[in-house]
Length: 449
Image (cartoon, rainbow, N blue to C red; front, top):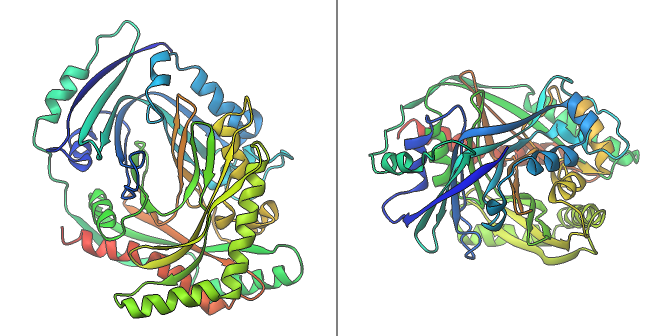
Protein backbone atom coordinates (compact mmCIF):
# COMPACT_ATOMS: atom_id res chain seq x y z
CA UNK A 1 0.00 0.00 0.00
CA UNK A 2 1.14 3.54 -0.74
CA UNK A 3 1.41 6.16 2.00
CA UNK A 4 2.34 9.80 2.34
CA UNK A 5 4.27 10.75 5.46
CA UNK A 6 3.17 13.71 7.57
CA UNK A 7 5.17 15.20 10.43
CA UNK A 8 4.91 17.59 13.36
CA UNK A 9 7.63 18.51 15.84
CA UNK A 10 7.11 20.07 19.27
CA UNK A 11 8.69 20.34 22.71
CA UNK A 12 7.95 17.38 24.98
CA UNK A 13 8.95 18.84 28.34
CA UNK A 14 5.32 18.88 29.57
CA UNK A 15 4.23 15.51 28.15
CA UNK A 16 5.52 12.06 29.11
CA UNK A 17 5.25 8.89 27.02
CA UNK A 18 2.99 7.34 29.67
CA UNK A 19 0.66 10.35 29.53
CA UNK A 20 0.57 10.19 25.74
CA UNK A 21 -0.16 6.47 25.77
CA UNK A 22 -3.01 6.86 28.26
CA UNK A 23 -4.49 9.58 26.06
CA UNK A 24 -4.29 7.59 22.85
CA UNK A 25 -4.41 3.87 23.62
CA UNK A 26 -8.15 3.60 22.89
CA UNK A 27 -7.89 5.36 19.50
CA UNK A 28 -7.69 2.07 17.63
CA UNK A 29 -7.81 -1.71 18.03
CA UNK A 30 -4.10 -1.97 18.88
CA UNK A 31 -1.34 0.21 20.31
CA UNK A 32 2.14 0.04 21.79
CA UNK A 33 4.51 1.91 24.07
CA UNK A 34 8.29 1.40 24.05
CA UNK A 35 10.61 3.06 26.56
CA UNK A 36 14.16 2.78 27.86
CA UNK A 37 15.97 3.78 31.01
CA UNK A 38 19.34 3.19 29.36
CA UNK A 39 20.12 6.79 28.40
CA UNK A 40 23.84 6.13 27.85
CA UNK A 41 23.83 7.85 24.48
CA UNK A 42 21.64 9.99 22.28
CA UNK A 43 20.60 6.88 20.35
CA UNK A 44 19.18 5.20 23.46
CA UNK A 45 17.30 8.24 24.76
CA UNK A 46 14.00 7.60 22.97
CA UNK A 47 10.49 6.41 23.71
CA UNK A 48 7.83 5.49 21.16
CA UNK A 49 4.03 5.53 21.25
CA UNK A 50 2.26 4.01 18.22
CA UNK A 51 -1.41 3.28 17.57
CA UNK A 52 -4.10 2.69 14.93
CA UNK A 53 -2.76 -0.24 12.85
CA UNK A 54 -2.99 0.10 9.07
CA UNK A 55 -1.53 -3.25 8.06
CA UNK A 56 -0.76 -6.32 10.16
CA UNK A 57 1.35 -9.38 9.38
CA UNK A 58 0.04 -12.42 11.27
CA UNK A 59 1.60 -15.86 10.86
CA UNK A 60 0.73 -19.23 12.37
CA UNK A 61 3.37 -21.91 12.83
CA UNK A 62 2.10 -23.72 9.74
CA UNK A 63 2.19 -20.56 7.61
CA UNK A 64 5.64 -19.71 8.92
CA UNK A 65 7.02 -23.11 7.94
CA UNK A 66 5.68 -22.54 4.42
CA UNK A 67 6.89 -18.97 3.89
CA UNK A 68 9.91 -18.62 6.19
CA UNK A 69 10.44 -15.95 8.83
CA UNK A 70 12.90 -13.62 7.12
CA UNK A 71 11.12 -13.93 3.78
CA UNK A 72 7.77 -13.00 5.38
CA UNK A 73 9.15 -9.98 7.23
CA UNK A 74 11.03 -8.72 4.17
CA UNK A 75 7.99 -9.11 1.90
CA UNK A 76 5.76 -7.26 4.38
CA UNK A 77 8.21 -4.37 4.63
CA UNK A 78 8.68 -4.22 0.85
CA UNK A 79 4.91 -3.91 0.43
CA UNK A 80 4.89 -0.64 2.41
CA UNK A 81 5.34 2.06 -0.22
CA UNK A 82 6.62 5.14 1.62
CA UNK A 83 10.12 6.11 0.42
CA UNK A 84 10.41 9.11 2.75
CA UNK A 85 10.02 6.89 5.83
CA UNK A 86 13.21 5.03 4.92
CA UNK A 87 15.24 8.21 5.52
CA UNK A 88 13.82 9.11 8.95
CA UNK A 89 15.52 6.61 11.25
CA UNK A 90 14.77 3.15 12.58
CA UNK A 91 11.71 4.00 14.67
CA UNK A 92 9.47 4.29 11.60
CA UNK A 93 8.61 0.71 10.80
CA UNK A 94 6.62 -2.28 11.99
CA UNK A 95 6.15 -3.12 15.67
CA UNK A 96 5.25 -6.46 17.15
CA UNK A 97 6.27 -9.81 18.56
CA UNK A 98 7.81 -13.15 17.66
CA UNK A 99 6.85 -16.11 19.88
CA UNK A 100 9.40 -18.66 21.07
CA UNK A 101 7.78 -21.36 18.90
CA UNK A 102 8.38 -19.25 15.76
CA UNK A 103 11.72 -21.07 15.56
CA UNK A 104 9.89 -23.39 13.14
CA UNK A 105 10.27 -20.79 10.40
CA UNK A 106 13.96 -20.20 11.12
CA UNK A 107 15.32 -23.73 11.41
CA UNK A 108 17.56 -24.39 8.39
CA UNK A 109 16.51 -28.08 8.30
CA UNK A 110 12.88 -27.01 8.03
CA UNK A 111 11.72 -29.53 10.63
CA UNK A 112 8.77 -28.68 12.90
CA UNK A 113 9.51 -28.61 16.60
CA UNK A 114 7.20 -29.88 19.34
CA UNK A 115 5.27 -27.52 21.60
CA UNK A 116 2.14 -25.56 20.74
CA UNK A 117 -0.23 -26.07 17.82
CA UNK A 118 0.14 -25.40 14.10
CA UNK A 119 -2.75 -22.90 14.18
CA UNK A 120 -1.20 -20.84 16.99
CA UNK A 121 -0.22 -17.32 15.89
CA UNK A 122 3.52 -16.97 16.51
CA UNK A 123 4.41 -13.80 14.56
CA UNK A 124 2.51 -10.52 14.59
CA UNK A 125 3.75 -7.11 13.40
CA UNK A 126 1.81 -3.96 12.52
CA UNK A 127 2.42 -0.74 10.66
CA UNK A 128 0.71 1.92 12.77
CA UNK A 129 -0.81 5.07 11.32
CA UNK A 130 0.60 7.24 14.09
CA UNK A 131 4.11 6.97 15.52
CA UNK A 132 5.20 9.40 18.23
CA UNK A 133 8.92 9.51 19.00
CA UNK A 134 10.10 11.18 22.20
CA UNK A 135 13.73 12.33 22.16
CA UNK A 136 14.57 12.63 25.87
CA UNK A 137 18.00 14.07 25.13
CA UNK A 138 16.59 17.02 23.19
CA UNK A 139 13.20 17.12 24.98
CA UNK A 140 11.46 17.00 21.61
CA UNK A 141 8.45 15.02 20.34
CA UNK A 142 8.27 13.98 16.68
CA UNK A 143 4.75 13.04 15.58
CA UNK A 144 4.50 11.03 12.34
CA UNK A 145 1.48 9.87 10.36
CA UNK A 146 1.43 7.23 7.63
CA UNK A 147 -1.52 8.51 5.60
CA UNK A 148 -2.95 6.10 2.99
CA UNK A 149 -2.93 7.57 -0.50
CA UNK A 150 -6.11 9.51 -1.19
CA UNK A 151 -7.06 10.00 2.47
CA UNK A 152 -7.06 13.24 4.45
CA UNK A 153 -4.29 13.47 7.09
CA UNK A 154 -5.54 13.09 10.67
CA UNK A 155 -2.42 14.46 12.37
CA UNK A 156 -4.06 17.81 13.30
CA UNK A 157 -6.76 16.03 15.32
CA UNK A 158 -4.08 13.95 17.06
CA UNK A 159 -2.29 17.10 18.18
CA UNK A 160 -5.54 18.44 19.66
CA UNK A 161 -5.99 15.24 21.68
CA UNK A 162 -2.47 15.55 23.04
CA UNK A 163 -3.46 18.86 24.62
CA UNK A 164 -6.11 17.12 26.74
CA UNK A 165 -5.46 15.85 30.28
CA UNK A 166 -4.60 12.15 30.44
CA UNK A 167 -7.32 9.92 31.95
CA UNK A 168 -6.45 8.02 35.12
CA UNK A 169 -6.21 4.23 34.70
CA UNK A 170 -8.68 2.09 36.65
CA UNK A 171 -7.32 0.53 39.86
CA UNK A 172 -5.65 -2.89 39.75
CA UNK A 173 -6.33 -5.71 42.21
CA UNK A 174 -5.03 -9.25 42.42
CA UNK A 175 -7.67 -11.93 42.77
CA UNK A 176 -6.87 -15.18 44.56
CA UNK A 177 -3.47 -16.83 44.88
CA UNK A 178 -0.63 -17.27 42.42
CA UNK A 179 -0.84 -20.53 40.46
CA UNK A 180 2.01 -22.40 38.77
CA UNK A 181 2.11 -25.17 36.21
CA UNK A 182 5.01 -26.71 38.16
CA UNK A 183 5.66 -26.90 41.88
CA UNK A 184 9.14 -26.04 43.07
CA UNK A 185 9.77 -29.75 43.64
CA UNK A 186 8.66 -30.61 40.10
CA UNK A 187 10.90 -27.89 38.69
CA UNK A 188 13.87 -29.25 40.65
CA UNK A 189 13.14 -32.69 39.18
CA UNK A 190 13.19 -31.14 35.71
CA UNK A 191 16.54 -29.51 36.53
CA UNK A 192 17.85 -32.91 37.67
CA UNK A 193 16.78 -34.33 34.31
CA UNK A 194 18.66 -31.50 32.61
CA UNK A 195 21.81 -32.29 34.59
CA UNK A 196 21.55 -35.90 33.45
CA UNK A 197 21.06 -34.78 29.84
CA UNK A 198 24.25 -32.73 30.09
CA UNK A 199 26.20 -35.67 31.52
CA UNK A 200 24.89 -37.92 28.74
CA UNK A 201 26.14 -35.46 26.13
CA UNK A 202 22.76 -34.46 24.71
CA UNK A 203 23.43 -30.78 25.46
CA UNK A 204 26.03 -28.62 27.14
CA UNK A 205 23.25 -26.50 28.64
CA UNK A 206 19.46 -26.37 28.62
CA UNK A 207 17.29 -23.55 29.99
CA UNK A 208 14.22 -24.84 31.84
CA UNK A 209 11.54 -22.49 33.13
CA UNK A 210 8.50 -22.18 35.42
CA UNK A 211 5.21 -20.56 34.41
CA UNK A 212 2.98 -18.66 36.85
CA UNK A 213 -0.50 -17.12 36.66
CA UNK A 214 -2.26 -14.47 38.73
CA UNK A 215 -5.95 -13.58 38.29
CA UNK A 216 -6.78 -9.88 38.55
CA UNK A 217 -9.41 -7.22 38.10
CA UNK A 218 -8.96 -3.67 36.82
CA UNK A 219 -6.32 -2.15 34.56
CA UNK A 220 -3.07 -4.08 34.10
CA UNK A 221 -1.37 -0.88 32.90
CA UNK A 222 -0.96 -0.09 36.59
CA UNK A 223 1.35 -3.11 36.86
CA UNK A 224 3.44 -1.77 33.97
CA UNK A 225 3.68 1.60 35.69
CA UNK A 226 4.85 -0.10 38.88
CA UNK A 227 7.31 -2.36 37.06
CA UNK A 228 9.00 0.46 35.14
CA UNK A 229 9.45 2.26 38.46
CA UNK A 230 10.95 -0.55 40.55
CA UNK A 231 12.78 -2.43 37.78
CA UNK A 232 14.12 0.11 35.25
CA UNK A 233 15.68 -1.68 32.29
CA UNK A 234 17.08 -0.97 28.82
CA UNK A 235 13.85 -2.29 27.25
CA UNK A 236 10.43 -1.32 28.62
CA UNK A 237 7.30 -2.10 26.62
CA UNK A 238 3.53 -2.33 26.73
CA UNK A 239 1.77 -3.76 23.65
CA UNK A 240 -1.96 -4.27 23.23
CA UNK A 241 -2.94 -6.18 20.09
CA UNK A 242 -6.63 -6.21 20.96
CA UNK A 243 -6.43 -9.83 22.07
CA UNK A 244 -3.71 -9.86 24.67
CA UNK A 245 -1.33 -7.41 26.24
CA UNK A 246 2.41 -7.90 26.66
CA UNK A 247 4.36 -5.70 29.03
CA UNK A 248 7.70 -5.96 30.74
CA UNK A 249 11.15 -4.65 31.60
CA UNK A 250 13.68 -6.78 29.75
CA UNK A 251 17.41 -6.37 30.42
CA UNK A 252 18.53 -8.25 27.30
CA UNK A 253 18.50 -7.46 23.58
CA UNK A 254 17.54 -10.21 21.17
CA UNK A 255 19.04 -8.25 18.28
CA UNK A 256 20.02 -4.66 17.53
CA UNK A 257 20.89 -3.57 13.98
CA UNK A 258 21.92 0.03 13.30
CA UNK A 259 23.59 1.16 10.10
CA UNK A 260 24.10 -2.52 9.18
CA UNK A 261 25.98 -3.33 12.39
CA UNK A 262 24.32 -6.20 14.27
CA UNK A 263 24.70 -6.53 18.02
CA UNK A 264 23.59 -9.03 20.67
CA UNK A 265 24.06 -8.80 24.44
CA UNK A 266 24.19 -12.28 25.99
CA UNK A 267 23.45 -12.32 29.72
CA UNK A 268 24.64 -15.32 31.72
CA UNK A 269 25.48 -15.24 35.39
CA UNK A 270 23.02 -14.04 38.00
CA UNK A 271 23.19 -13.25 41.71
CA UNK A 272 20.76 -11.55 44.05
CA UNK A 273 21.11 -7.81 44.64
CA UNK A 274 20.46 -6.47 48.14
CA UNK A 275 20.36 -3.03 49.75
CA UNK A 276 23.80 -3.62 51.26
CA UNK A 277 26.68 -2.41 49.08
CA UNK A 278 29.09 -4.69 50.96
CA UNK A 279 26.93 -7.75 50.31
CA UNK A 280 26.57 -6.78 46.66
CA UNK A 281 30.32 -6.38 46.26
CA UNK A 282 30.91 -9.83 47.77
CA UNK A 283 28.24 -11.29 45.47
CA UNK A 284 29.88 -9.65 42.44
CA UNK A 285 33.29 -11.08 43.33
CA UNK A 286 31.77 -14.54 43.82
CA UNK A 287 29.99 -14.22 40.47
CA UNK A 288 33.15 -13.15 38.66
CA UNK A 289 35.18 -15.97 40.21
CA UNK A 290 32.54 -18.71 39.82
CA UNK A 291 33.86 -21.43 37.53
CA UNK A 292 30.32 -22.55 36.66
CA UNK A 293 29.00 -19.06 35.85
CA UNK A 294 32.06 -18.13 33.81
CA UNK A 295 32.00 -21.36 31.82
CA UNK A 296 28.29 -20.88 31.11
CA UNK A 297 28.83 -17.28 30.04
CA UNK A 298 31.72 -18.14 27.72
CA UNK A 299 29.73 -20.95 26.12
CA UNK A 300 26.74 -18.67 25.42
CA UNK A 301 29.04 -15.92 24.19
CA UNK A 302 30.58 -18.34 21.68
CA UNK A 303 27.08 -19.39 20.61
CA UNK A 304 26.12 -15.75 20.00
CA UNK A 305 29.26 -15.21 17.91
CA UNK A 306 28.59 -18.32 15.84
CA UNK A 307 24.98 -17.24 15.25
CA UNK A 308 26.06 -13.81 13.99
CA UNK A 309 28.78 -15.30 11.80
CA UNK A 310 26.18 -17.19 9.74
CA UNK A 311 25.14 -14.07 7.77
CA UNK A 312 27.60 -11.42 8.95
CA UNK A 313 31.27 -10.72 8.57
CA UNK A 314 33.45 -11.95 11.43
CA UNK A 315 31.96 -11.06 14.82
CA UNK A 316 33.86 -9.30 17.59
CA UNK A 317 33.32 -9.02 21.34
CA UNK A 318 33.08 -5.31 22.14
CA UNK A 319 32.35 -5.76 25.86
CA UNK A 320 33.26 -8.84 27.88
CA UNK A 321 31.61 -9.98 31.13
CA UNK A 322 30.56 -6.53 32.31
CA UNK A 323 28.83 -6.43 35.67
CA UNK A 324 25.40 -4.80 35.33
CA UNK A 325 23.22 -4.01 38.33
CA UNK A 326 19.43 -4.18 38.10
CA UNK A 327 16.84 -3.60 40.81
CA UNK A 328 16.84 -7.14 42.24
CA UNK A 329 19.63 -9.02 40.45
CA UNK A 330 23.20 -8.58 39.22
CA UNK A 331 24.18 -9.98 35.81
CA UNK A 332 27.31 -10.65 33.77
CA UNK A 333 26.77 -9.15 30.30
CA UNK A 334 28.83 -9.19 27.09
CA UNK A 335 28.30 -7.39 23.77
CA UNK A 336 28.99 -9.04 20.40
CA UNK A 337 29.02 -7.06 17.14
CA UNK A 338 29.27 -7.90 13.43
CA UNK A 339 28.65 -6.16 10.10
CA UNK A 340 25.89 -7.60 7.90
CA UNK A 341 27.02 -9.08 4.61
CA UNK A 342 25.89 -7.37 1.43
CA UNK A 343 22.24 -8.01 0.60
CA UNK A 344 21.39 -9.51 3.99
CA UNK A 345 18.34 -8.10 5.80
CA UNK A 346 18.09 -7.70 9.58
CA UNK A 347 15.29 -10.29 9.66
CA UNK A 348 17.76 -12.88 8.39
CA UNK A 349 20.12 -12.10 11.28
CA UNK A 350 17.18 -12.29 13.65
CA UNK A 351 16.44 -15.80 12.42
CA UNK A 352 20.10 -16.77 12.77
CA UNK A 353 20.17 -15.70 16.42
CA UNK A 354 16.66 -16.77 17.50
CA UNK A 355 15.84 -17.86 20.09
CA UNK A 356 18.65 -16.52 22.22
CA UNK A 357 20.98 -19.15 23.60
CA UNK A 358 20.42 -17.62 27.04
CA UNK A 359 16.76 -18.73 26.80
CA UNK A 360 17.29 -22.10 25.12
CA UNK A 361 20.74 -23.63 25.60
CA UNK A 362 23.44 -25.27 23.51
CA UNK A 363 23.36 -26.96 21.07
CA UNK A 364 20.35 -24.78 20.48
CA UNK A 365 18.08 -27.04 18.43
CA UNK A 366 18.44 -30.04 20.75
CA UNK A 367 17.87 -27.80 23.76
CA UNK A 368 14.64 -26.51 22.17
CA UNK A 369 13.45 -30.10 21.67
CA UNK A 370 14.16 -30.93 25.30
CA UNK A 371 12.34 -27.80 26.48
CA UNK A 372 9.27 -28.74 24.44
CA UNK A 373 9.25 -32.30 25.80
CA UNK A 374 9.80 -31.37 29.47
CA UNK A 375 7.97 -28.07 30.07
CA UNK A 376 4.19 -28.62 30.45
CA UNK A 377 3.11 -25.83 28.06
CA UNK A 378 4.32 -24.06 24.93
CA UNK A 379 6.23 -20.93 25.91
CA UNK A 380 4.42 -18.51 23.63
CA UNK A 381 5.83 -15.02 24.08
CA UNK A 382 8.21 -15.99 26.91
CA UNK A 383 11.71 -16.31 25.47
CA UNK A 384 10.48 -14.79 22.22
CA UNK A 385 11.13 -11.23 21.13
CA UNK A 386 9.39 -7.86 21.00
CA UNK A 387 10.37 -4.79 19.04
CA UNK A 388 10.59 -3.01 15.70
CA UNK A 389 11.86 -3.56 12.18
CA UNK A 390 12.63 -0.14 10.73
CA UNK A 391 11.80 0.66 7.12
CA UNK A 392 15.41 1.88 6.86
CA UNK A 393 16.75 -1.62 7.62
CA UNK A 394 17.39 -1.18 11.35
CA UNK A 395 16.13 -3.61 13.98
CA UNK A 396 15.51 -3.20 17.71
CA UNK A 397 14.26 -6.27 19.57
CA UNK A 398 14.37 -7.31 23.21
CA UNK A 399 14.03 -10.82 24.59
CA UNK A 400 10.68 -11.29 26.33
CA UNK A 401 11.77 -11.89 29.92
CA UNK A 402 10.79 -10.16 33.17
CA UNK A 403 7.44 -9.72 31.47
CA UNK A 404 3.70 -10.34 31.79
CA UNK A 405 1.19 -11.54 29.23
CA UNK A 406 -2.30 -10.38 30.16
CA UNK A 407 -5.32 -12.18 28.74
CA UNK A 408 -8.91 -12.75 29.94
CA UNK A 409 -8.26 -11.41 33.42
CA UNK A 410 -5.09 -13.38 34.12
CA UNK A 411 -1.43 -12.34 34.20
CA UNK A 412 1.00 -14.97 32.90
CA UNK A 413 4.70 -14.71 33.72
CA UNK A 414 7.69 -16.99 33.56
CA UNK A 415 11.40 -17.32 34.33
CA UNK A 416 14.07 -19.91 33.73
CA UNK A 417 17.54 -21.04 34.73
CA UNK A 418 20.41 -22.44 32.68
CA UNK A 419 21.12 -26.05 33.62
CA UNK A 420 24.65 -27.44 33.17
CA UNK A 421 26.55 -30.43 34.54
CA UNK A 422 27.44 -28.67 37.79
CA UNK A 423 23.97 -27.27 38.48
CA UNK A 424 22.33 -27.73 41.87
CA UNK A 425 18.53 -28.07 41.52
CA UNK A 426 17.72 -25.98 44.58
CA UNK A 427 20.06 -23.20 43.41
CA UNK A 428 18.45 -23.09 39.97
CA UNK A 429 14.99 -22.92 41.58
CA UNK A 430 16.26 -20.03 43.72
CA UNK A 431 17.50 -18.25 40.59
CA UNK A 432 14.03 -18.44 39.02
CA UNK A 433 12.51 -16.91 42.15
CA UNK A 434 15.10 -14.11 42.18
CA UNK A 435 14.31 -13.23 38.58
CA UNK A 436 10.58 -13.07 39.36
CA UNK A 437 10.89 -11.01 42.52
CA UNK A 438 10.54 -7.68 40.68
CA UNK A 439 7.37 -8.90 38.95
CA UNK A 440 5.77 -9.97 42.22
CA UNK A 441 6.72 -6.67 43.80
CA UNK A 442 5.24 -4.78 40.82
CA UNK A 443 1.87 -6.49 41.29
CA UNK A 444 1.89 -5.58 44.98
CA UNK A 445 2.78 -1.96 44.25
CA UNK A 446 0.15 -1.71 41.50
CA UNK A 447 -2.58 -2.32 44.08
CA UNK A 448 -1.54 0.83 45.94
CA UNK A 449 -1.39 3.24 42.98
